[in-house]
Every structure is written in structure tokens, then in C-alpha cells.
Image (cartoon, rainbow, N blue to C red; front, side, top):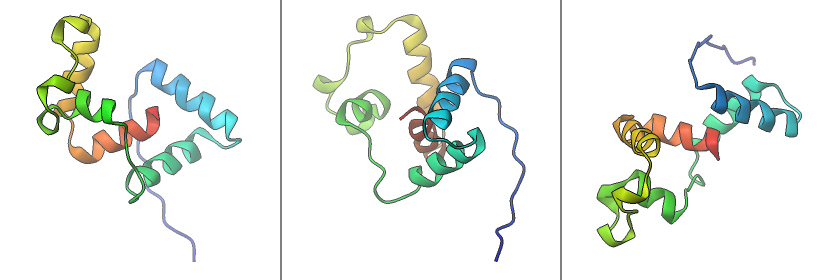
Amino acid sequence: MRLEKHRFVVRIPIPVHQRVSNAARQHRRSINAEIVTRLEHSFSADCTCSAAARCALYPDAAPHSELPSKSALSAAETWVVNAYRRLPQTKRHALLALLG
């Protein structure tokens, strides 16, 4: 039985697109297949991120001693972390899978 597919348009920054494109080329699949594979992985039980990533991206879950100091982050890095924190949990996992 063939799965129905939904067409979904998403805007992503050029550097992220380049990383996905490079990963797809390395894995010998289309960009679409790379994104779908990574999204599926992000919803699987074996999807984990490193302690450092959890500390930076989930500040409520980490002791303050594990967090990077605000002065250690550039303005662009602070913007990225804050934008990430505003994302719903499912989008956070999907984004981490794409970047992973």
C-alpha cells in the first residue's frame, strides 16, 4: 500500500539548506528524502542530543553551572538560542535532527 504524501513548503536559512543538501549528497538521496529521514528519526525513541546541547537549548532542565555564560555568546548566537527556545518541542527535535 502506498502512503499518501502531503506537499509542504518551508523556508529555511541558506546555510541550513546547504548542510541538508551536503548530507543528502553524502547519503546518496534527495534533499526531500534526507529531510524526511531526519524528521522520522527525530520522532523515534532513540533520538537523543548531547548534554551540552540540552544545556544550551533547554535551560530549565540544566543547572546554571552547566549553562554557557551570556557573555560567551555573540549577539547572533544569542538570537539563535532565543529563537530555538520559542519553537514548539516537535520543531526543536526536527531542527536538531536536520542539523545533527
